[in-house]
Length: 99
Image 1 (cartoon, helix red, strand yellow):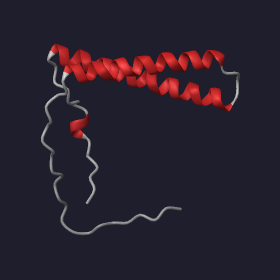
Image 2 (cartoon, helix red, strand yellow):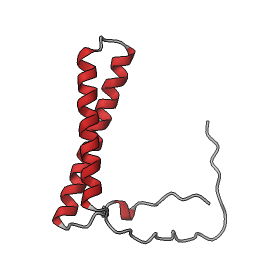
Image 3 (cartoon, rainbow, N blue to C red):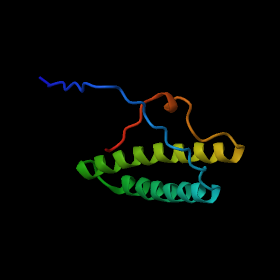
Image 4 (cartoon, rainbow, N blue to C red):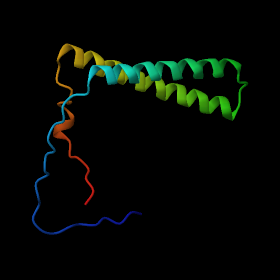
């Protein structure tokens, strides 16, 4: 059972962080290139590795790289088209902060 802690007092508004400038296209393309090369290496390793815990780990990393590569390519498309990089759905969600 979890204990719920309730903080009493006035609710404070979340402070919005200023939007940063979008990353340069060269940096995004460098990430895409790096992820692509790493994914090719892992594909090669998966082809030669027998079934077992090492192969399972490689398959997990491969799936993570595919997701990262997709996100990087979408970011590259958004930057090249001039579309705003900030996600409109995330602006309505509360942001976590350290205090």
